Amino acid sequence: MHDLSRKPVHLRASALCIRDGQVLFVEHRSFAPGDPAFPETYWILPGGVVERGETLQEALRREVMEETGLECSVGGMVFVKELLYPYPGLPEQGVRHHSVSLGFHCEVTGGTLVTGRDPELPDDRQMILQSSWLPISSLTSYRLYPPFLYELIASGHQHGFENPCPGFFDSML
Image: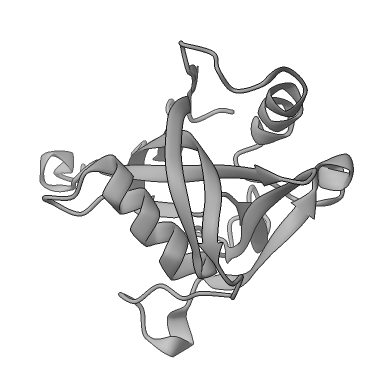
């Protein structure tokens, strides 16, 4: 058995940016390459790990800038997502990855869309493939991760994101 007490649980912040019927996404390589349960690439919201000493808002603005070249203002929290890999109930659950992501509704305030990079990774190990505004009307044509985003985005776009209680989504969603 691995000593899980020595592996950190990563706190992540994710930005849900909607503008003119489109959502800002980053196409990303799989964090579990070769696992048939995951596609080799998928679209995720821009965001990443909060660094020690950073506020959630600072981390989110930094990550959005690094990954997309865009500036944003941070609004309310819209979801909490826990991910353990391997999944709960499987042998060695969470050994390879354990994170908690906090998703915030954000508004793009400036910048120019570019495909960013992960500054902590060398060029030959970059995870980001492209950054793009995807039309809400055709999101089902894309592999979004996590999958609950399809419904969350559709509902929020239709009814707004002013819900005072963000949804919680476990590893299986």
